Image (cartoon, rainbow, N blue to C red; front, top):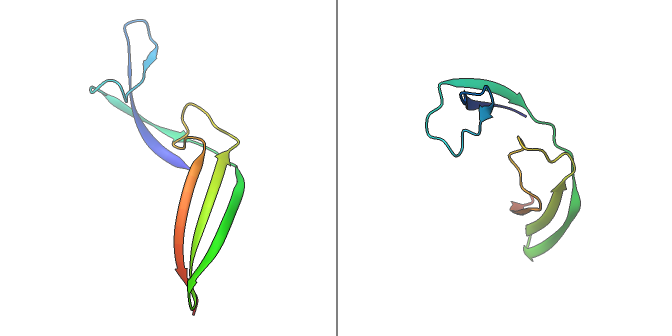
Length: 80
């Protein structure tokens, strides 16, 4: 995944976390690689409709990752 993240430097040359500071004079492109593992469960509802439940863990979790462990996902589907 690529995303653009704002940044700014403090007087000592260190990058300040933009999410805690409202002023950000520049932007940089960040590449984040994620590898997910987990388990899921699919439950039929009625006819061809179903619901999915998943719990996932990001094995490449880092400071720049937009995901927090664990990740819960719910999905609905209708078969044709």
